[in-house]
Length: 395
Image (tube, rainbow, N blue to C red):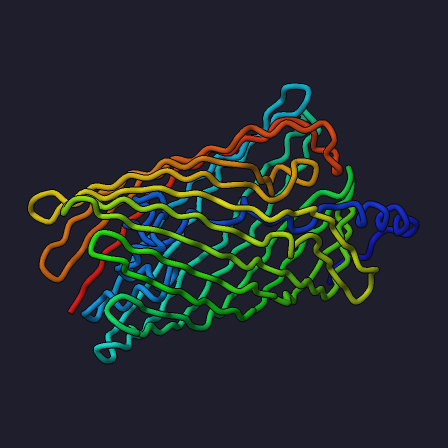
């Protein structure tokens, strides 16, 4: 049986609650992308979209796949989040996460194809331990959304294909955030949301392709519980929080100037302003709303692939990722900032099999704030390494 908060602590607790950060998502929440081949090209894959990852990047691209294709992969994401306080003390989180993917495509007719995908487009799992000597309180923030996507692609003619479908998102929140020296808020919720995706692929000629992809926004009503803790005393209430994931629009071109060389360029826009604020509602406490001041953001990606003898392929890419939440509204376990990614990849096709490997290194621009509304002034740095493996079988 849960204990109740000590008498007389309620007013102070509510004041702390209203000023407590809750669910700072935005650009720092996005995963690197999907599929080792696509990521090896810096994620510039909207106009390529010629393997199972087309389900994520551009479903119209499935029209290029003549066979039934099963593609499975795993990505190890190893971030290092560092928060350096004004007094020079550094706290850090190095918690890693795994991101599995599964894509299945099938040619139904000469013009019509269908696909099914499971992937994780948004994920964060950061944890900072107590530092009693320096007065830093532990905080944890885990937020993951896993999508199930069913799509179709139709080849209008030799040069133009259209695609689209339904996305079902399964979202989970698990966080523990200090709300003052003696108070803590713990949230555990999950929910399901629905969205859609549409894509276009145009083959200008044998050397140039262009792609366009639009994803709708997705609202997820999370249900679960909120625990208010004051020392060893805890009170639990049912809780609800609606999160508005952003819509996105991506444009890409893929150029094949030589038989064995492909160069791709993508530009993407994300409507993060839809997540300008997040409200948590409970059965026994007033609503608490967090202002994120999130702004729309974008990224630019460029990559290339070179075909070697014996069906080997080498890849490289670069991406610039724009942050969405200003440094005045972030906390150590929920940071966000502009960042750069460098990708290297290698793969080989062996009969019905295709094997791909990826390495990615990412770093954010150092954020330095002296006006953080939650009092977490100082420097924020994120370094991230990603290793990916994908295996595909076509028949």
